[in-house]
Length: 96
Image (cartoon, rainbow, N blue to C red; front, top):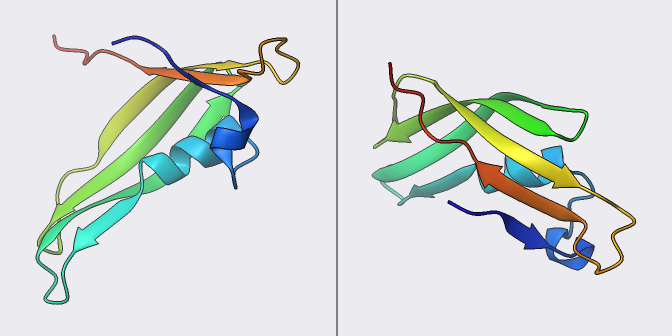
């Protein structure tokens, strides 16, 4: 996959790469009966605004599944001349 780039206005209301990615990887698509899927960021860190590491717990129908790791490469340049201050790219799965 390629890089997804955006101007600061597209990050609103988030002001940092970490807060933006935390929000992007947190969602709840369960109905009133609790059926559906959800994803929750348990912990995350964005080291030097270069790499975002997160522990993420998916759930199906209200039952938590095993926590997984998500890694995104980050490009953060608040002074970018073209206005695209933030970009991220998910890392390929690490299969061994």
